[in-house]
Image 1 (tube, rainbow, N blue to C red):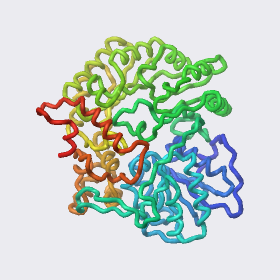
Image 2: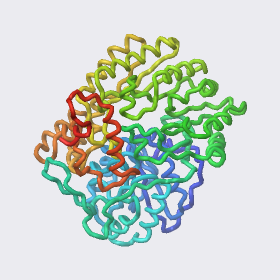
Image 3: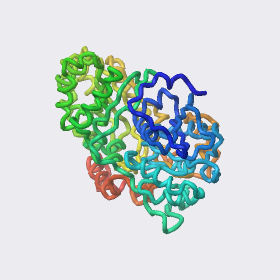
Image 4: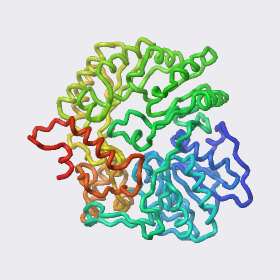
Length: 551
């Protein structure tokens, strides 16, 4: 099944010639090639492995692969999307590897996983992996390979015990989970012996040279694009945001030492550049970078920028983007309600949103895409009315600008201050309400699937008991109905759907990921949540907001 898609690749690195005793490795992305090769994280890890002479790496996607080793010693997965777990199980079976780690023996490879989904909360998927890498790959990957080499010829259990000593490497089988009841909360997560670390700390790369594309291809979902990571994390720290809280601290790539040389390298193979990051325009030297890209010698370059902070949208930015073949800009506003933005710590005023639209139009852009959210903790019906009013005002102020409002449902994420809150049961109705109000205004309303949000929340707050459910839903299909059917079949053996998805959890419970440490301690997350709930509109006299989660 080796495909011609690899032929169209233009590599920006030089692969090493593997040694005679190089470790046969498969590095997989659990989706189609066009999706996988567009992932900057996947590209960088693959190139890092391929540049080592002690590794012989082959790539595997759901629709194609390079020649695979007959007896791989290491099999890795980069996981960017929760529902891709189905493809992980299918790929394991396709190369005759048991899907559960406990069923593997010394003849099977060490199966590892990494990426944002597994770093946030690996527990629902823990039984399928031997090893999970928590955090940034820059240092973690090399430490993992070096540790593996030192025990390469040992038994499987000896390998796992040795790997568990490496900071950021989590070996789920070496931790025992106890529950208050089969359908109750986690009671404790303990290592099986005293020589296993009690907690595993996510690893953070702190350098000022960030990731860039290692391959450019017309077969990628973003055709022929060269991606440059401008910033990592986000300094805004919106209370719900995994992209900010899990990846702290905010780091910026050096313009002179990293970004400009990277862009020049990319332009040797393509004329399309993508600047990536959760908040690209908050790079302290973004103006310098913009001026560099505004030179006449870049007139034939097509420039794309990821979501930008609303109050950094200037006429100059819009002009440069329009000149560089971009027609649209994306900003995250979350809501038109000032109070709701205080709850989530979104430091933004309505007049700044209006000004961003005016500047975008004045600079020559034709489209503005706004991201919003419903079901945010503390949201009231009047908050939705204020969002509608804001969008109407935008349309009235800049009538010729095409407005798109993409709207998702709040989903609780591990390691954020809102991890204890459940999904609002009214969220689906609120999405429908916004659609009804905005569509007649000529605003392109694009709601994210509410059912998908339910599944996302389930996997976001899940524990190891979900592995049985995930195996069942793979057979039933990945619709919400499949999950409900699987819950029905496992009734009494695991908690129900509401427990994971809709219930507010007490702040006193042991969370499924308590033994996996993110950048901030729980005490800080609790303080940030208390700051958020201080803005809640609570009609009950004398009720403290935090008491909502201690019932």
